[in-house]
Image 1 (tube, rainbow, N blue to C red):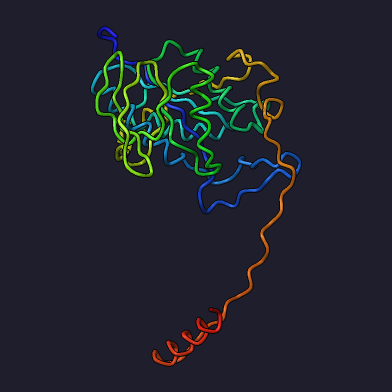
Image 2: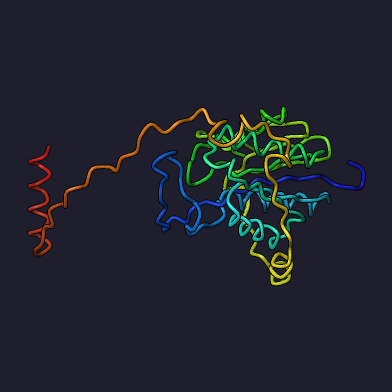
Length: 265
């Protein structure tokens, strides 16, 4: 590591806001993200914060990358405002329709272009797909160790890290050699808010946009061509019928509700 610190790369995704009205492409079964109200995937903000804390402790550089339409530059600027040093956007029509395998492959090609690196950080999952697959698949493409569901980094050096993983029944402590990929949960930290100077710097930043040629991607491995996951059909859930509203005085409502429950049982 020397005095240069660690080279940290964070993957972020722009996702539709929970209240956004998102349309679906009827031909491909994929989300139409252009024009929809979008935000940074919340779990990715924790990954950014952890990378910044590692940089503050050991020195180094934090690079953030995203794959998506041109409007995804907004989440990259948000990351720069938080304190990341560099940002790159992977955007090209040929990337459209990527499933998790094609997405992780595309991200891996960009990360290899940015090599050497010490750590790749991702949120545990995106709130739109909620597959939690991109991080582990990315580690496989890169050929590095993965540590998922990290809730705390207990120790980190230029050679290894010791981390706690959040499991259903408790936590697990693991040690992994660098380079390593980790996915983080929200328990790990509390993301900082961008400062005024950071916002000004981010607004002035020029974010490079890379296509498949820039990252040396195999055309058969990206977008719909590289996505073995296929959507066979889409349909809306059946309309729910309105429930019965019971009105009256408290005792009367309780009596009627008890009658309904007994009749069901």
